[in-house]
Amino acid sequence: MSEVLEKWMNPNVAGIIPYQPGRPIEEVARELGLDPVGVSKIASNENPLGVSPKAVAAIHSSATDMHRYPDGGAYYLRSKLAERFQVAPSQLVMGNGSNELIEFIGHCFMDEDRSVVVSAHAFVIYKLIARMMGSEIIEVPTVGLGHDLAAMAAAVRDDTSVVFICNPNNPTGTMLLQDELDEFIDKIPASTLIVFDEAYAEIAQGAMPDMLKHVQSRPNCVMLRTFSKAYGLAGLRVGFGICPAAMAEALQKARQPFNVNRMAQAAALAALDDDEFLEKTNAIIAEGKDYLEQSFADLKLDFQPTAANFILVKVGDGAKVTEALTRRGVIVRPMAGYGLGEYIRVSLGTMTENRRFIETLADVLNT
Ligand SMILES: *Cc1c(COP(=O)(O)O)cnc(C)c1O
Image (cartoon, rainbow, N blue to C red; front, side):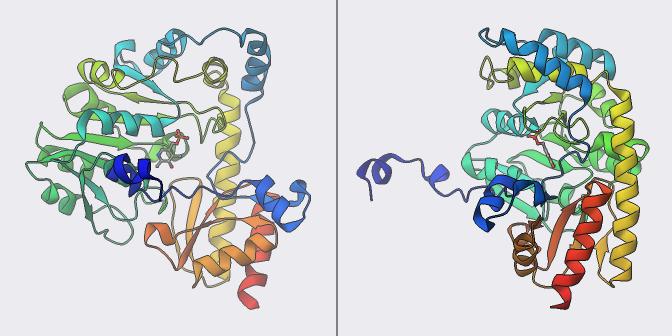
């Protein structure tokens, strides 16, 4: 082993098991000798409609400005978001995806002497960042496949700096309701940061509880949102946090000056103006959800009803089924890394992709 690594590599970082993303279409196509056009990727909860045409136009017209550094303060984007959410621009922190906000939270609030509370079967990035910072991870078992809020509140200790709530939860699709969240928040000490990760809020729509009221009335709440899902900009990496101004000022200290690139800012601004794209996105997701849930019932497969744009379905050996689907050109996500080895998670795609998935799954399960 390299002496440098042995002697100096931060053991917290060395212990990290890298995040397993959905496999890129190009990689699978290359491996199978297929035309990429013939491969369906329904593994990363990406937008089935692609990119908003307004965002595409903004991307094109920003291209000739790419010799310029971005606006590090993202003035226009933060102003527009502030107006949208009825908060002050000083309450917004922009990230290279909302994943980066989780990292800022880690830098600001986690270290070896602290603990972090998460739910089992929740977004793995929380644990990954906590581990990187050397914090103890307190993982609370779920009820059904959803967060057990009472147990999570009870798990918070004096040394717990952060508790993560993922709602709707990725990868289970479960949804927490207003009343139970309000009750939970009342039980958390003001000295513990509560993070509401709401990556699928625009998809959950009316069912989405209002966490902004807590952000506005408490010093210890942060809400995370992203442009990667409903807004279809996963490739550009832009997300944000909304929190009290003092908290935002703290989180900004962990942020690199140009973390959100110029093209991403232009595209996100335009995407916020494209209500039609958002409506179409939600229509296709609703149609896909009905179709998949009905199909799973027909195939006698257990699934978790979802509030987001993906469904967790029990298939027996998730890794084997994923591999067999991949060989047939359908990429889904195995769930062993989430402690759900019997399941796969499938994103709601176009109806063509959804039908192909069901046909291929039926074929795989019968052979
Ligand atoms: C997709 C997702 C995010 C955001 O990802 P970014 O692309 O980094 O914005 C955050 N949390 C959850 C639970 C997600 O599923």
